[in-house]
Amino acid sequence: MTSALSPIYGRLPVSFDHGKGIWLWDTQGKRYLDALSGIGVSCLGHAHPALVKAISDQAARVLHTSNLYEIALQEQLAQRINAISGMSEVFFANSGAEANEGAIKLARLYGHLRGVKVPTIITMDSAWHGRTIATLAATGSEKARAGFDPLPDGFLQVKYNDLQAIKDAAQQCPDVVAILIEVLQGEGGIRPSDLDYLKQLRELCDQNEWLLMIDEVQSGIGRTGKWLAHQWAQILPDVITLAKGLGGGVPIGAVAARGPAAGILKPGHHGTTFGGSPLVCAAALAVLDTLEQDDLLGHADRVGTMMLARLHQALDDLPDVAEVRGRGLMIGIELKRPCGELVRTALAQGLLINVTRDKVIRLLPPLIISQTEANELVDRLVDIIKGFLQAP
Ligand SMILES: Cc1ncc(COP(=O)(O)O)c(C=O)c1O
Image (tube, rainbow, N blue to C red):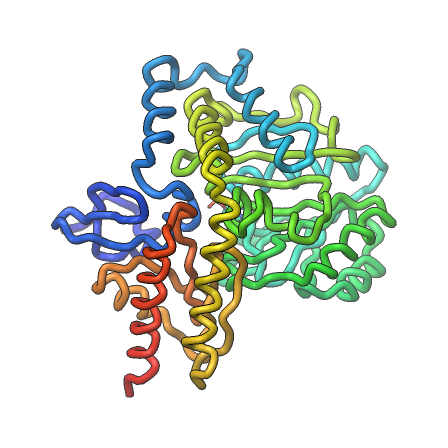
């Protein structure tokens, strides 16, 4: 049967009917351990009572009013985001790409206000910032960009985790106004940047009056064991972007700004019909409350540390394993050969994982995963990897 859908996705042959906690059940009744959370979204797992209640209560009151009117829940959520991030103002979007698009607009306006003719943003190789035209230009994946020329100017891509590369690029281009970076690259293969590098990045931005813009779309909202992954380096960026885990499953994005980045966007500069609706703000507030009340940040740190230790122990000595790495519940296992087929192998065995950059097995389990469930995940995954590597 031909599908009514555009063939954009190479979908796996499974459809889920319902979920509970870290478990999903398909339409045939088979149970799966969800170690991917819908690509880092379902941080509270599935059907979490607090999130279900917040969404259904809000749906019964009002779903949407538009940004023509005041939205008290948006104000509350912005205050919470400022409190956890050290930012001073927030505007809302509907996805990660849209949040980054907003950050890019903010940086360009910041540049123009300073008289810079072609405001240029430094971005990183292997970066992933989204699939809109501007965020594609900021994204380091040739595969994602192919076929969509002309992409907008104003981006300068440099080597990730290499301060000198930024200095060299800036020497060639006097119009740099900002750096946009994931401190722990997700799609790029769970690649962390050094904490020292991030501190130096902050200094470099201060010296040059560039905005330091951190894309926390995948790494934020507790995923690495802190609210935001850059907090491990104890730095304060000028702009952060959020999405994915913020809504726990409803589509929301956010751009938070402070210092020189605050007050740049004024009435008429930006807008969105759906962004920050009462529904998504109620959901995001429930997510943040639950993460805090249940100490899920500390939990993600502890469980993630245990999982990483066990994965190191089981896999480090295998000749075809390149590296086990990550932080909190954002974990990558890089093999020395392509392993995309592992996604189907795991699926057949009731385990949902992902492979990015052809060789990196990516785990982003819900932050509510228990120690017992995490142990089960490690045991099952190690068996699958060993079976794959032993096969002729
Ligand atoms: C770091 C990062 N930024 C931006 C995006 C784009 O987010 P979205 O798919 O919600 O547009 C992603 C998506 O994977 C991401 O990982």
